[in-house]
Length: 241
Image 1 (cartoon, rainbow, N blue to C red):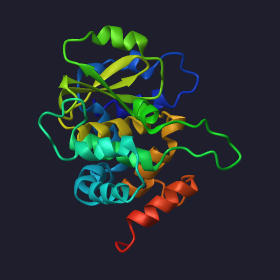
Image 2 (image 1 turned 180 degrees about the vertical axis):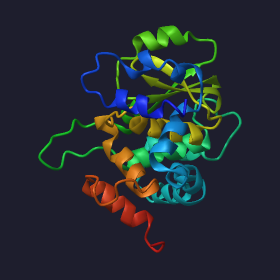
Image 3 (image 1 turned 180 degrees about the horizontal axis):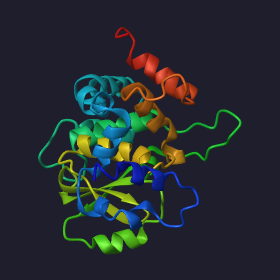
């Protein structure tokens, strides 16, 4: 599959193509790890490894600390409680996914600027990023009802904090993740946007732009950033620059 990397990229960037790349390159549906492989060939090992290297020990604790300073918010409090890893808390995400959703809460779209963005709650934005399907439920039925083209993460397991399989859903197709943890699965989800040349979901634009420029350091200084993205980066990196 490395030998056909250039062909896949040519296909992805062919705006006149009438079919999805997944319809042509069926190996993406059968072989986990191809998204990570192609992203690494695009950007190199150092960039490709940045999220897994920097999120758990650097960004995650800073995001949690920042959220603990916010005013009362039931959604944030529920995510913070999930960080305590209570075994009977079967209705909440695990610690890592909860922290990623806290970052999303800090970077919800705003209506500032010329382009008006529809107001959206943190829970609604989270549904654009990740969804849960209980083990045993029909994946086919789920895919038939998945209406968005922008990729999102599907987590399948016995309960939300015990996920057995991760998929990236694109064009109502399920691309299996090589990842076995929520952090690694999100890493693949982010990379899918570049591998398949897909725009960010409008509701997640601030969130993904922050991850792109601040964590992966891709297109720093060139990517268009909202004031909220710049403010959060300055706050989280204060004293570490």
